[in-house]
Length: 368
Image 1 (cartoon, rainbow, N blue to C red):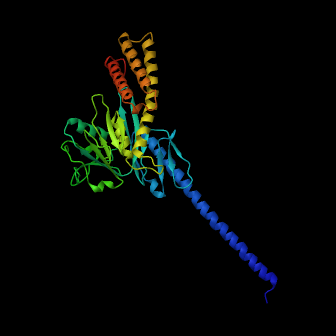
Image 2 (image 1 turned 180 degrees about the vertical axis):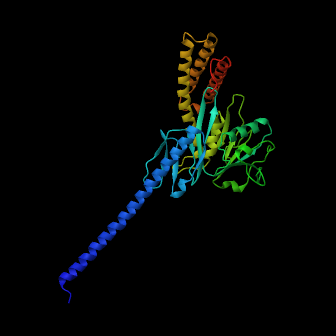
């Protein structure tokens, strides 16, 4: 016959076992979640290192580690500095110290591109998943083709790599794959000539996330889907429209920022194309301000040096003055929203390029 003491031991043992089992299950769950967050943080840091390596070397690469875990990433270009934020788990934000256009995906291709202003280059990195960019060119002038090809030149070249960034055309309901046998084009294969005077695109396939629709038109409808771009005016400025908003552009990188970001909204309700456009112009301003200050100080030092070439001094003075004008145009953080300020900036950059090239022609400067 079982004594009361034995019954008590049995019940007590069951209670202790249940408590220990609960503790072990809870601990293993917390440990598994913590380990997953640690791995996410490591993958995000590895991605940032890969992007920085591409920025420094110009050698493209692909990055597939995001496929190892569940990720819900957001690029926050409005932060200072910009950050990559994980909306899954408890992972610290990763600061972004280089100009980076990052669209999250399970696998992304990372490439470097740049704007060349002769005396200075603006380098930026693009990290994107599989993307197909479809152009609809409604005009027939050369400026339509030139604008289209200037955009394509600043997008990633994925030849021999995956994932792919590919290009095609659309006219009405027809999706045109102009390369090979019914295939979209790599950047090096792309040729806009012969694909002009197209009808506005109404193809329904382009609703998939990987597509970007770009319309080149003399008169854009702000409510049209995708991004619509009007050719540049005589002052090398133009307007682009997306999601009902207008964006002033001064170079192809402004348009690339809008295209890469696209119309999709993040979890905070921010249109990604607009965020990248604002981010690009913020970083462009910071870097050009720094470069213009350094170059103007250098020009004045050389001009005032006793052994400087007398033939070079006037051009160095003019070059330094043009760089100061650039600094004046960039004095306001929202410079890129004003047509008059943008006109001053474009004029000052053009003058600085002219004086710098004159210095090279006289042997005062070396070609970089």
